[in-house]
Length: 200
Image 1: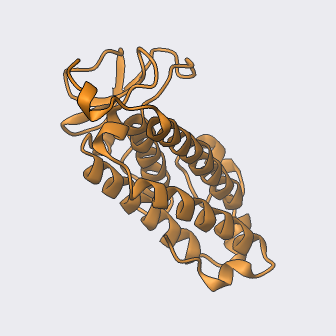
Image 2: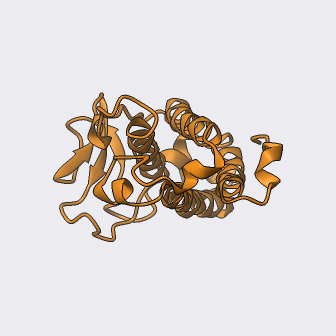
């Protein structure tokens, strides 16, 4: 589990948004550390959004610059079920794009990040982006939380105090991290065929 920096307990806006980020990541990263390939790939319902090899997608849109792509429906907010692999990939490109346009080169968009379909590589990719984001946020001063335009990833980011973006990514991590935990709970609680019944 990730160590919670002691400065997160100070009574400042910066400390509070960092504390929420750190605690959320500690919970999610602990679950990701135990994730199996079967859990990553399992479709919770027919037609679920997946991470697949390029050329094997079922949806009209994809995100990802490498051999693997995350499927996206034509309608941005179309409520389709998602695999854990998709949730991990989505968090990777969300944190990657915001890190790039806040602390990085201000060059790559979400479609240009490399995603992975193998469980350990997928978790490592997300961990890299979240760790880089956490380091950047922790390096800022108290007043930077209120700086408008600290990130230029989106028009909203450019017009809002930076603390709003930190809270937004915290919400993304809590929201999708909770989905990952629920899906793994359901998978692990599902009855499995007894050894003697396999192939029956």
